[in-house]
Length: 223
Image 1: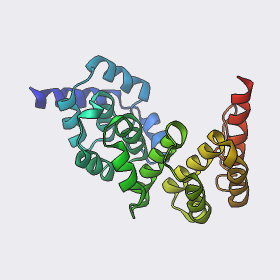
Image 2: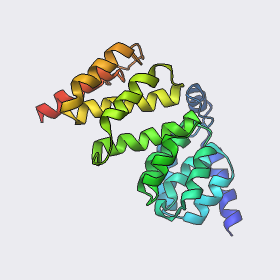
Image 3: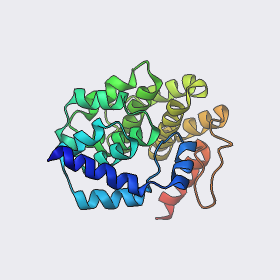
Image 4: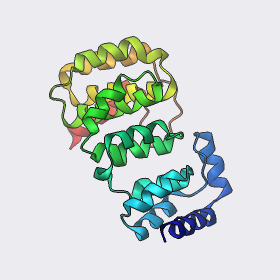
């Protein structure tokens, strides 16, 4: 029955495939053509199904994996499962959803954060930085924020894209959430100029850390 269910879901995803959506996604390294709104509708109908989620993940198909991450039970995965899944995630969207929708809700999140943060693979390390950024915002106790800024200052400029993006997010979050370190975070951002010229759509905040920090602090003060 489970095999049939996977086949049915794969057929539904194939029917939702849109070449124009695929073309846009492929520019960001994501090899699927399913509108994410439609994908969420499928997930809403299927509800939580852990075994189906595992089988969909095992297909290796990007749209199926994104769906799997929406219908899985995040706390049901073992640490080794999540580590293997991250290393096999391949595409940026699958990597991002896995970290944000599953790993952050799993009891092993902190252990994985520490392990991934020090991983020699920059894509794996970027997941460690993403989890660290979450802690900077929500549970900074025990983190060496000054040490994080030291590492960002020394390594972010020349880091590979995914790792650089994650480090930059951490820099911005430190500047936004921790007033005592804001001046230093702004200074690091100004000097390194990472993502300074990143194309930003109208009504969106630039990922350039000094602009990002300044804008988010302004919003906090306006509340």
